[in-house]
Image (cartoon, rainbow, N blue to C red; front, top):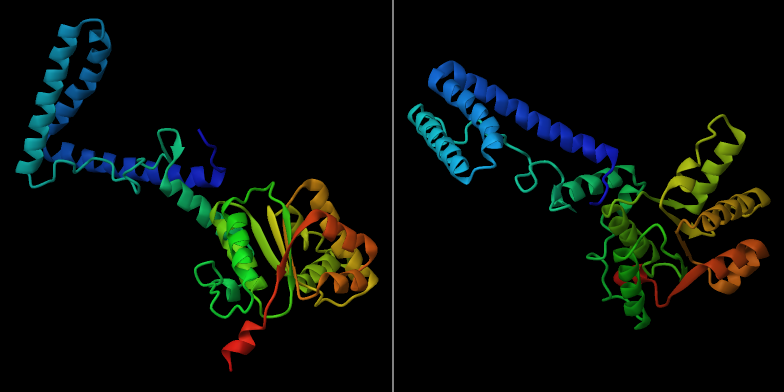
Length: 305
């Protein structure tokens, strides 16, 4: 059986307990209205114990089962005569497939997967402007280079098979070629599978690192180390100085050593990255990242023509 998070388990347990509690309240109401139903329910409770004693005898078991069926039929008829549906005091679970247990035959139920996905998206740091950046909304119509079809499929494959052990990716190429859109699309899929994803610009990441180093907010950069997928957008827009480059290098180094995947997008080509950043950072990126080159003309410029 797959494990579930404590938070998801609490949600399901609360749902299930609420459904059972409300069903018990309806049963108590029926007992006040109909003494006969109250008597039948007491008898059915006794029959449950009788079944244990009758387990060694097929004849006795058949007799007990028949008695149980007659009582249930009588109970149903009384409910109908009183104007209630026959399942009036049956628990009304949010998910009738798994009865709010979260599992069906040892497999996670769709309701549990939805709770985990919602929980992950709640923790995921993804800007509002990227909400609509999914694979479904990415179009190749304005892409001027045929290689972009392969890039799109590679990104989709990476997202669908993503695990906390996935490889690092460097997306590089000119502006307006879809790097941000596809990185966000990967984030949506990964978060939907229950992974904690952080998508942030290199400039904001460095700002948080500086805050963690020089203020009392020591946890300002904590999310960048703890998330299961870190997406660093627009590497290169940040101010280039010793602290900023050192902060980026330290973050990337630490995640590489820990085996935590990253996606970096940049408008620089490889030769520009080498000239702008120190040899150590460039070496780490080139040696530890799978590269995806984005080629073509700025889609935004094409659209306004």
